[in-house]
Length: 214
Image 1 (cartoon, rainbow, N blue to C red):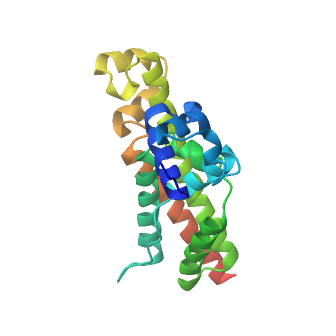
Image 2 (image 1 turned 45 degrees about the vertical axis):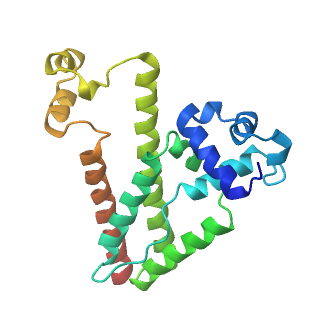
Image 3 (image 1 turned 90 degrees about the horizontal axis):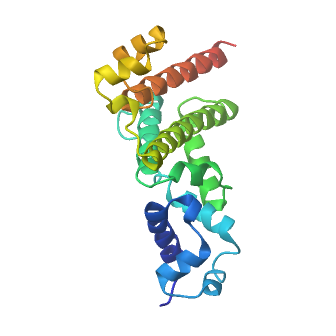
């Protein structure tokens, strides 16, 4: 079978879904592709470079603001798209968090910064805002996927899926936490993510306003 870089990356993402990052090896990937391991090193220097290219594929494609989209709505949409892309693959956040940005990733990042500058951000504020949102998205998915894998490995039911009586037994000694969980649900779930994202965007807006009045 003849392979190219795209074929290898797509196969690696499939192996990631099936086996997880800890079991993703060049040998297993070569077996999946029906080739010998040295054939893959014609395309990638080492596993680290392969993971970096996988990380590029795990980021959503560029999407400029649509008609009527301001910087807030565009930033919220891009964050949600990024999260959805990461959640679509097992251990994706671990791959992205440990990656080195290549030329394609840097060019895409620069294009996103240019969008924010077009909305009135200074370059420094644009970089800090974009990195802040990126860290929030990757970090939240990293924790969510790690929790899910831990529960799966232990054969446990996640606390948010337990019956009310069982949840009450777990939080009996922590009444404030119990009240928070009762009122807000899973702190790593979709609703909590959205709330945190809005807090971050509100903070970015406050920083942008400080820049304008300085």
